[in-house]
Image (cartoon, rainbow, N blue to C red; front, side, top):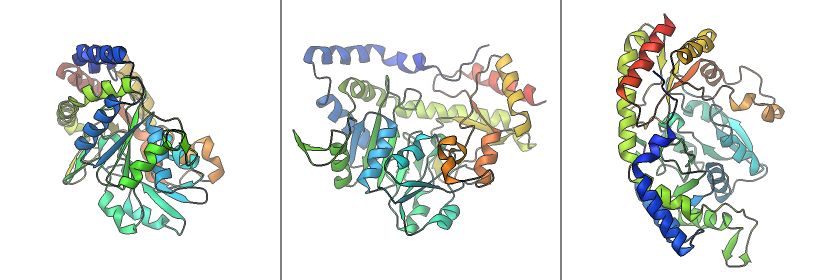
Length: 368
């Protein structure tokens, strides 16, 4: 049996006719940039996230960058974030002229540790960027105690909840990615911010459109970061199935956990813990194995037809681009240890039970 890591064709197949109908309408009207397709999607996404406002932008990285700028982050500032995210989290901070300051993560959930954040709060701290890693919300309420603006990196957490709030409603602003593999994926690139602050959304809207307050009235240096109407039309359709897709992901995660319970209990495999009152959306299904055996285990899974991945093999502070920060190996031991141990297993709504059981059985054999 062949089990792909993700099946993008299956993700979009149920709405193929609806996509084509929407695109036909855009072809007829010529409204390819801006217009109702964009504003209607923004309104629907804001409602889904439980936020007052949403602003669609070209990529998830743009969402991070523009949100940081809307918070006033700039040269000389410091922004605290986790070292075990995708590179774009820190990259966006650097593009503002600020310096990323990393805080280690909790060993059970791999989410940013508020105790570690507290150690790094300093006079130049301008914002905190907790990463909702793998589809589970970080403890934003615990980060509120520091009195610093919070930007949720919700690129992997569309629809995830913690307590009574969804991703995108906890922080001062949140950034989402609509890269095709995300729980809510575009038919290309895409991103969005959500916020309850009208001043933040107003500034992001201005920054995404060359800093224009009105046509040909450029009040600041901005970007060409608008998300086109074609992508928004498709996202509005996909949004209707997001909750059902997330529910399927949670069902798959429960089946994985049940199938791996015996070896997890024996300590052969570690599963990422679910935080109290958390309802993750399992953008990724990640396990941890002994670092010395990870490559061999992945190779055996590949031989069994199971595709896997590693998110992410090198923590951000150990990337060559951040060598100038002088952060040696061992600076963030939890994140570094996890990076050497993690394997991402196949996870998508259309993953069948037989395929999932094959992954579990193949993994158990690989660990014998």
